[in-house]
Image (cartoon, helix red, strand yellow):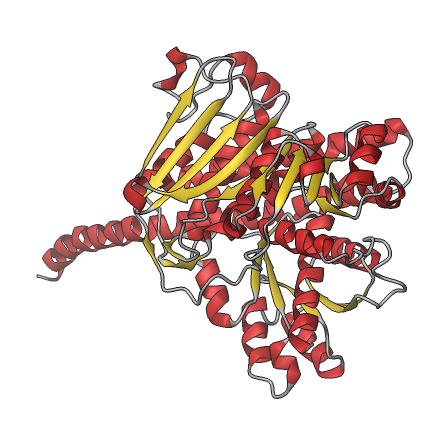
Length: 510
C-alpha cells in the first residue's frame, strides 16, 4: 500500500508542482523584466544625463559632436529597451489598465516637453494643442495614453526631416471620449505599407531600419494599447506629404473644479504672428478660450508673437510698432538680452505650453518686465534647498550638478532612512526621491514624511524611477508623492520640475 501511495502521489505531486510553476511563471517573468529594466535604465540615466551636462560646458566643435553622439546613441538604446520590454509584457497578455482622473492638457504637453530636446536637435518644431471644448478632467490610464503619444510622436520626429510635429488632444466624434492626433510634415507613409504599419517588426523599408534604428515595435505597441482601451487607431497620409495618426478612446469626463488656467477673457485681444506652422497652431489653441482674434498685420494688432529665427531687421521693425513676444528655443536663452535691445517686450520658450503663453501674454499686455532666466537667481541657494535621495552615486552627482546650476543648495542621501534624518535637520524646498533604495525605499520614506508634524509634511516630493511597472503611478500617489518622473531624466527637465514646484509654493504663500 505504501508503495502504491508513493506511485500515485508522485505524479499528482508533479502535476501540482507543474501547475504551480505555470501560475508562477508569469510573475517570475514580470519580476525579471522589471529588474532588468531598472538595472539598465539606472546607468543609462547617468550616461544620458552626464552627456547633457557636458553639452552645457565650453566645448570645441568636435567635442560637442562627440557629446551629442553619446546622447543620441543612448536615447536610441533607451527607446529600443522600452519597446522590447513593453512588447514582451504585452505578448504575455500583461496589459493592466488604470482608471483615474487626469488632465488631457498636461498629457499632451508632457509628451511635447519630453520629446522637445530630440526634436530641437533635429532642427524640428514640436508643440501641443488642446481643443478648448475638451473637458479639463477625463477618467482613464494617463500613463498608457502618454506611452501611446510618446511612441507616435517619437516615430513622427524620426521620419520628419524638416518642419515639425504637432500633438493634439480633442473631443471624440459627437463630443464624446478623447481623440489624440499626431501630425507631421515628414516623408509620409506609402499606400502599400499602411496595412502592415501596426504589425510587430514592421518597417516601411530596410534602409529606414538601418538609418534610424529600432526594430519596428513602437507602432505595434500603440495598436495593442489602443485595442486594450477598446479604441481605434488609423493613419492618413500621402507619401511625401506628411502623416496624421489619430487615436480614439472612449473615456468619460470627471467632475472638475473648473478652469484654473488664467484667462484673457474680457480683453479684445488682436494677435499678429510670424511663426512656423506648429508653433502658430499652439499659440492659437492657447488663446482660443480667451476670444483672441488673429490679424495679418502687426499694425492692426495689440500684440505680436514672432520667431527668433526671423532676420534681426524684421524683428526690430515689428517690435518698434507693437508689443512683441519672441519665441525661442532653449539654446537661445543666452540671447534674451539681445532681443530686448531689439525692442521685444518678452519671450516664450519652446515647446510652447498653453499656461505659459497665457501668462506671458498677460504680463506683456500689462507692461510687466519678464526676468531673464539667468537673472532670476542671484547666488547659490537663492532658488531654494533641494534633497536628492538616490543610492546611485552617478545619478546623485548628475542631479546635484543640474540643480546647483539652477541656484539650489543641494544635499544628498543614499537611503530613505538617511533622507528622513536630513529632513529632521533641514526644511527643504523640494525633494527628489529615488523609489528603489536600500534600507528604506522611496515610497516608504515618502509615507513617513507625510506623517511628520509641521511644514516638513508638505514638502513637494518628486519620485524618480527606472521601473516600468504601470501600477507604480497609483502606488506613488497613495504614498503621497507629488509627481512621478521616469528615468532617464535630462538636466533641463530636472531643473524645470524643481523650479516649477518651488514657484508654486511661493505663489501659494503670497
